[in-house]
Image 1 (tube, rainbow, N blue to C red):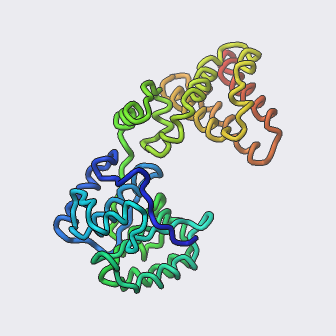
Image 2: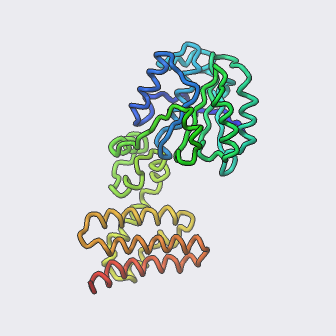
Length: 318
């Protein structure tokens, strides 16, 4: 299905319920207040920092029959938006790994149809940086001469993949990573998670999306931390305590990335950091081996033996 109408589970989402990026929310709120809505926006920032949530709420404000920033939630447009049935709002998602030219062509056939409930129509193109070049060139035609009632919001993580001609026709709004304290408060208040290590916060990297992916695996992450922090033990003991790595093939890339986060933090906090830098190289080597379909258990053996050697034997020889 090329066009997917947005559905908000469990009721509407307001700016007040979205963590972080207060500057962005203020800019968009002022544009609603001053009735200075532009035809095209580009929301730029890391994955999982609220770009799509804010885009959806901005769309709802634009379409509200009362043009209300204070969450009308009573007009036909708002009610239909919350139920995922607003005919003036369409969300375009990648078809597989890309957004194809056929999707943009279908979008263009819909664009010429005037709004039904509201004075505007809003189209959100999520992961717009995944548009093929053909799709981008096709979209450019609409951006150059948009109907007066159209608002297009492109959500991108890597603006370098977007044609300069498209970027020049959009108001670019940059989103910031979310503050660690806000993420910790979110985990505490919404997820009942009270203890989060600095390494896990580094892994979240200011992204609520990453945070939500990690929260159910915090116990696993703590086990991995214990393995790395106890590499001064015998290699036999380390292997015996590393079942988390041997038994979680489906999550190994994520866990290897976390090992690198731990090693990096150890490298920047120790004067003798070459052993941790070399250990990161070991992890990267293991990633390459796994990508080449090498034997899984042998890759984990290689990982543990070589990190142990870097941290212990080579260090003692130095």
